[in-house]
Image 1: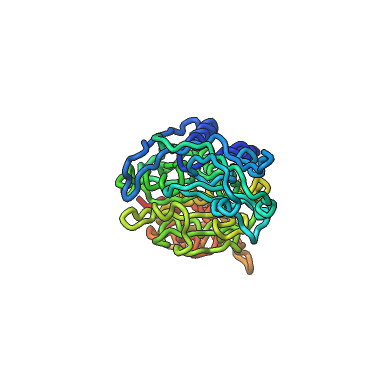
Image 2: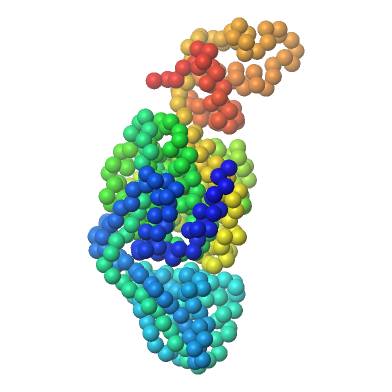
Length: 424
């Protein structure tokens, strides 16, 4: 178990991230300390990417609301969710009735500060809990946001782990939300841990890992890479909301029948049969871009509590207490299982006509008697019967309802005994 997962999350949590700016760069710098081979790239403001334009960079230094006695009743320094993302600068006294038009709270969750953004429409605003809002009794308040919108860059990180084949498995996660634990930092933390483990393995497929701002980041990345990705990517996953202890969730690719879908559903069935299966119509993250018509990449998601489906989502209640070391590690483990299924899946073919003599190979007892066939022997003989040069290991695993990782180990024995071989 990686004992540093929750520490990484704790270190990343307070960074004020948005789709551009210092918070993104600080986050990438931290991740690069974990995986030094990560390369960081910049895309300038104003660049057109498909139907979008890279926005100006947002910089915020201070924001608060003061009452008439100079007391700060709302302060960005206390929680970086207190300011609407990409707020324009403001410095004025304002009547409470007018100020209410720029305040955001959730009456149904009186202790929660909501997460609100306005990337492409010029405005400003503050977010606060309903309890805080109910305490605003003065007639006037001093609203101050010291921010800038300036020419800058959208930054992203990319790691390529070479395999024997140039065909790729794509892993993508986002780094653009401020202090939220499951919906933000769990993704890059789990992805960084996956990267560290995969760098230690011999891989059949090349692994491409990207850390990007959500939506505009994936659109920009695809603008520069989609033609190569369409040729090379055979499977992939958008990694988000992977930190809590609730049951797994699954969001399929648009195709729904890709190797990404088959491998993920197989692993989930054998790891957590109570997982929640969503449909493509429940999408909401970067799979929207990766699976878009004309892009058509086979990108799916394994999640814990899915975005939009838990009450803490996009609020200050999605804090570090909502995620756990075990939840993060279990998400690393399930993704490693799925990646290994894709990486190690091949089609075994028979080298012997009719059933092989297993006894002379010491693979089961020479004495045949009632009930002498153990489950292990039955499983092995069932596997041999399905090694026909057509079925993959995953196909065989599904047919006999055994985990891929168990069937794969048995097939390794059969290869060693010259009973089957990989089909070329």
